[in-house]
Image (cartoon, rainbow, N blue to C red):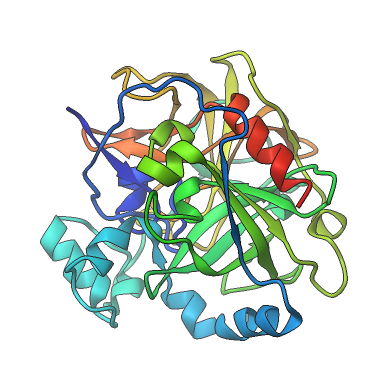
Length: 355
């Protein structure tokens, strides 16, 4: 059976592009794919209460110092770091790369060197690209952001997006950026919308209030349900939707079609500091192991959880969120897969926007 790579950490994107890593690439994480499962029962939602009191919110905000943010790993490295891997220190990524045959960003490994840069578009964004720097501006630069979280005592990063919701607080990301399958929930979960190079937080930092995943993800890590939704606390007394705006969200859309995927990949040739996008038509999982759809995309770990937008207007930067970056197969690093937003994702959203 073909193995998959979650995108949580440096190797995750290769293992699961949708991971929650600041760096953008995930370690090779050979998790067996699930057989295609029947859609989850609509009410099959699992919830976790995060930082609700003002004291707990302040603790989380104080936790994310510039140093911790810069050292957070793509979530795809989760298994390696927490299950017998090398200790988390300055040489972690360098050690992981030598053990796994990965190439990591020099500045992350503490070495000197030059990181390649992604293709840069000119005046108008390309309708087809496997990874370019988004330079057109618009709403997507504010609604897309970086996620910082702690899982099993280690700090990681992912990507996420705001969406239109009744409570004005919901962001959508990958399930593995919220909960480690049937394992632990994330702690210290924060969202930085419109993240800027060098750790800039132009619109503030929003902590998680309540987190939600689908039952099949929580019980078995089923990749067809790798979706996480988070209800945020306000920041400075303002809801995230009022601060940065939102993208629309839709469920049970027609399969196939043109899609734009966004995120903050961190492994070379990316550095995790810029908003990158892929664009093209999506297609069904050729292995038939998930209900996901694939998009030709070279984004690496750290992009996990980044939004896939349909009916996207490149001028305004607005579209409709219909999936998120989730994983890549180990024998095809050029295709990113995202879960289909069916009835399960719809139930997840209905619960999150009432939180």
